[in-house]
Image (cartoon, rainbow, N blue to C red):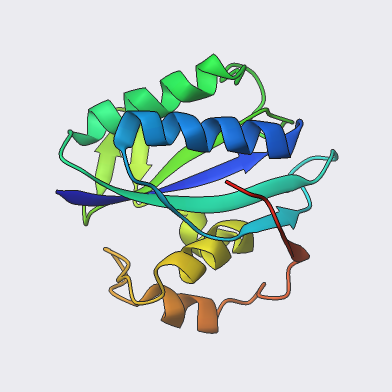
Amino acid sequence: MTRVYVSIGSNIEPARYVRLAVQAMRESFGEVMLSPVYETVPVGFEGDNFYNLVAAFDTGIPVESVIDQLHAIEERYGREREGQRFVARTIDLDLLLYGELSGDINGTILPRDEIERYAFVLRPLYDLAPELEHPLSKKTIAEIWGTFPQRDENMVQVELTL
């Protein structure tokens, strides 16, 4: 079994779409562990605030199948992948880590560089797995978070029953 981490984000009816995505992930992958949910400002464009969190699960299916299933969940809930990268979205499911796998898997780069670039990805990952070792830097998520320059990025934890 391989431990998988997925970033979840939404800024269109975020409470609704985050709940739907988590439910669909549980149907597809079984037991899913979740970080707290954070409300954050959009990065790269003007728009409504996002809800962001990280999910983790163990799976025996190949990484390509995980990616395909995540994309299918996004499509089911109205995510459009064509056009601009930084836009409002119903749901965004980004594979962050698939065990210690690294490289380009059909256009998905693992580990996702967003882990070390954005507090809205790193903080929930830290909440969920602080002792996890980043496959490339070999630093723990706690070490990365401890020296992260944007630690004070505007993030507010929100209560959301999932």
